Length: 314
Image (cartoon, rainbow, N blue to C red; front, side, top):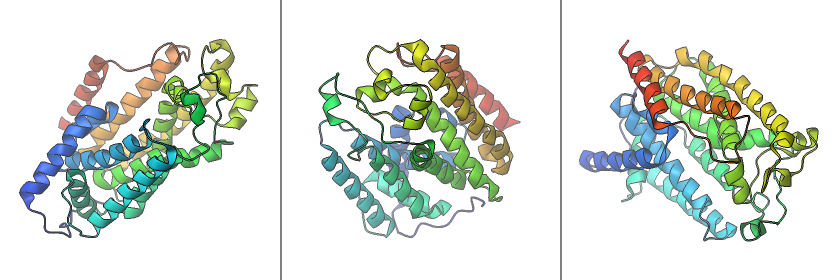
């Protein structure tokens, strides 16, 4: 699927669309952390499109993570947000810059609305009644649980919140071989498993655990072994297994790279390189993701970005 662009279906002044994209770029620059570095090596029209999609996702994530609202309130707000997206895409006027830019992007790059729906469905999984032990937000000794019994269950969550992002991105990147879709799906799984490993401590503090029960049971662990004062030697084998699983999924990135349009290949390379280095840093820390949050330095990410720019020029 190439990135041959189509005219937007609604007549929004170009100046308003340009302002909307600038708002989305600002949101991405502030919040995207690792993703934003990859955006920078894209041609401007693709950079704008990715920023619009990111701003749409960021708003949904912010709703699901709002600690001052109950789970039902957050689910209702997500439904309202998705309804607003559908109405904007159907041509109803909106003054929301994110929706203006997203609508323009969807029409220009032929992004299926069903993919946007699945992104919000993934976010909704974080506010399902069984996804959060609400009492743990107020009681650090409350039991922690996980809604994912098997890796297949977790895969569905990762697919919706990360693989679908990849399926949207490759429509912006441009591709012709349908094999790219399966490879983008697997890359998304790798990214999300990396995020899950990095954020175990933070998620546990929010009453969330993403690692499946069957994986915990394999190593004789309970969910509560991953919160509070963690015995690292006890949980390390579990984290090593999940990291190895992520590494296996990362192998799809090398196969995906030549399948997307050349002007987008540096961006995908930067994104994969940053996330692989993050997973490598987790491994080199002996999987101590509990003492402090593991991050790549700005200097490291700028170094990867510089190599990405070089790849773009060559």
